Image (cartoon, rainbow over the protein chains, first blue to last red):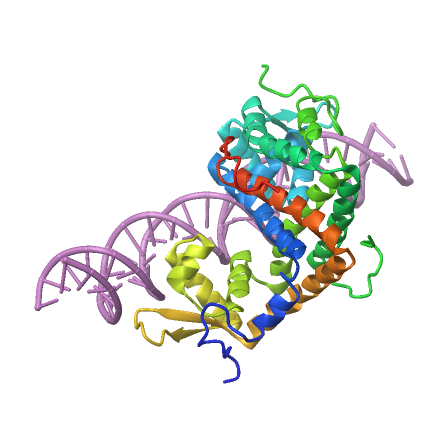
Length: 177
Length: 177
DNA sequence: TAATATCGCTCACTGAGTTAGCAATCAGTT
DNA sequence: AACTGATTGCTAACTCAGTGAGCGATATTA
């Protein structure tokens, strides 16, 4: 009975416990901007992947591949999937022409996955414009301002990392600005 | 032949086109911090979902539900999935005891999904600590500093949004700080 | 009242992930 | 050199969250 929210009557912005939500969030413009930024950030990869006709996993793999070839075991580790899944990712990327398998020069167990020109274009074509835009934005701020921003962002990062891993409340190290 | 990267010989940090990557990125500490932040941000939801034994989709649904009940058509729209998938999400959330179906008071076609106490605890328990940590961080900065941060973050958000949607290069509106 | 649209559901299917187990290879120890 | 154990990448069988098509029920509009 008391199981269900009593916010039934206020569809848009109910008053119940959701207030606690809003209380800790969206108070200052900077916090609101932070929220929007993180939201926008987590929409980039899915969107780019969809436009490229790739899985998010495949896109992450390509992003890594432009920095150099990777073996499948390592790939599985950084994607946090099974090696079987990594094999599948390689198959699909090869099918798209975005990557190629190559024997490891010294270790004959290993097979390295290399990005192709097509794969590199897919990744850089979508992401370089974003990087450029961010670099231009960054350049519009003074060194002192950038320092403030960096401290803020680093603190926020620490908070998010703590949320992502289990929250040990007594971890007071790490994110001190 | 010229298809494959010639970075084969430099596993760790090759010199090839990946340099273009690094050039536009990770130059200033603030840009590096921004990158880390976005990275950390996109790890939060998957991590929280896994710890809660939920799909990311189910977690997103719960986050929305704490703000009030939603119908399945609307839910499908905001999740960007089919209504069939939304039905499945509802089934699973009900199975977990995190949500309940209820008839819409006036429209007898509609079925609203309501969060339960259990569902609310699941969401708030994981996310409120993060919100609090961010609010505390925010409070450690002066209003002037927060203003700088807000301008920076808003510009960054605009760049990310532009990257998520198709990049129209001539869209100069929107994100001007 | 009739035509159209919307809502939530079921059904059959797709596809990216899982676990288990395989042969091949490498590395260290006798 | 040979044996042991770990690692690498693959296949096979399966799971499960998504899709598209189509359904009855209800709401909305002409």
